[in-house]
Length: 149
Length: 203
Image (cartoon, rainbow over all chains, first blue to last red):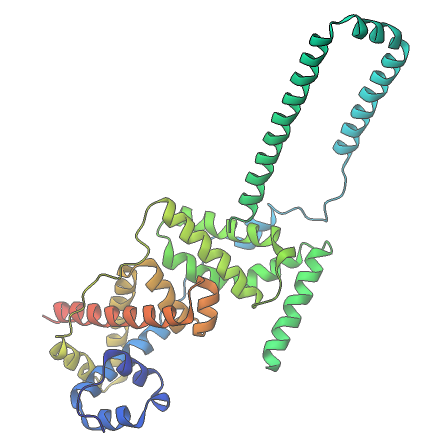
């Protein structure tokens, strides 16, 4: 049996699970009124904690959540098909226009000074790079938001 | 072990149903875990509107991340973890102190303690005992609310929800040792505050 009072952690442990405490502590507790008193106050506290009223939401959580969740597996919808159709039409028109007016395009391009051609190419490439970087940053932000929890 | 396997099988079955398009099965998950989420949200967040937002947000995040759930814990533990993290993020944004580890505790409460523990023995009749316990429960509820949000949550998850240190560690992302240490401090603080309040009320 130990003669010094066990620390608060040991007393809590005793109040929680007497059987897991060392024989020294159990021996001390059997004879020390102060420690017994402390342990009983913890036992009282633990019982009261267990019996605390459990909170509940005062609204219908399942209904609230379910109305924000798509009810079936997402499938390609009509809006997307419409977008694909528009893109296809634009490319088709560009293709037809390019084919019909290809000589005019080629000749006007050849008439440009080489320096101007390089300038146009550099500008277009720079714009594409910036656009690409912007899309990448936006993608990273979205992924970060999704991993937020 | 068998119970663990059964829980895992039930979780897998539910998740599979949802991922294959039966989103209504998610209602079962909400109903099964709502109480645990409420315990966390009520202990960490004070305002009703904020609680409502966080509870909804928790389940929406859970739904959208369901395919990434790897069954390394119970589904309820995973959802509780999302709820806890949402609360912590909310409190951090509002710059709340999540835990106050600098509080000093007063060990000189023996007299009050004696009165308190004796009170139950004194009340021999059941109605008196019930009244005392009701009073104690009311004081306790107030005292729990005065604890820092993390202490409140840990105490509730351990004592009210009977979760293990390991499960609480999974929910709060804290090592098991830290969970134990915080719980000891929280109980000590709670006991001392309770004795102080009881003494005041008894006077």
